[in-house]
Length: 209
Image 1: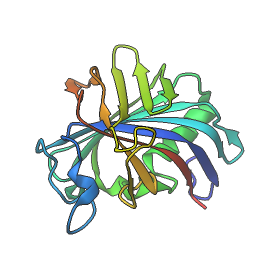
Image 2: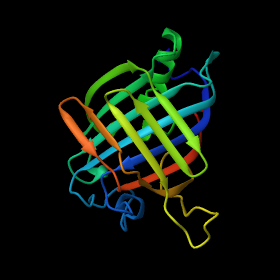
Image 3: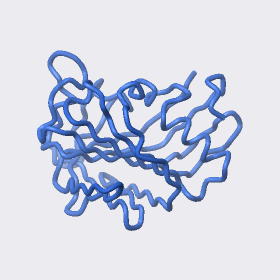
Image 4: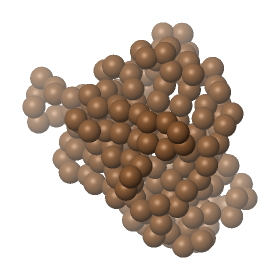
């Protein structure tokens, strides 16, 4: 399943919530992408993904969810990332292998560009993951581990979001958002609370074509 020759494509939705004050300086690094120092010194970011439509070498991934966390001791571009991956327990063995290949970057796609920055893999777990999307609101829940929710920051036009273009590896544009009152992750001896902190969301359309 991990062959780089396997063709795959996923389309769906993603969001993230980090510990930076709004707005995250990584998006607007003046010299090179991801080179600005996080506002809290280290970066602690959690991601939620929902696959609306997905195919990995004939393995259907429709409707499955994934969560990912990453911690960097300084600027993201400096590396030394620690990461953990959470896969939807509803996936069968082939689907789990496919999701792990895509979301570790071993088969190309956006995550592959970040893979060289990773020095520590904390683990890969199969867990129940609930992803919810409604209007300008996104949330993901892993019982006892992750409760993350974000909403769009207010814009001058209350019916529209504020979008940053060409600033993120996961999507060509990301909506500016903020963590809700309870946005936490607890695992591997760490606990993060990114409530009220920087967030983004966007549709995603990834492939290794």
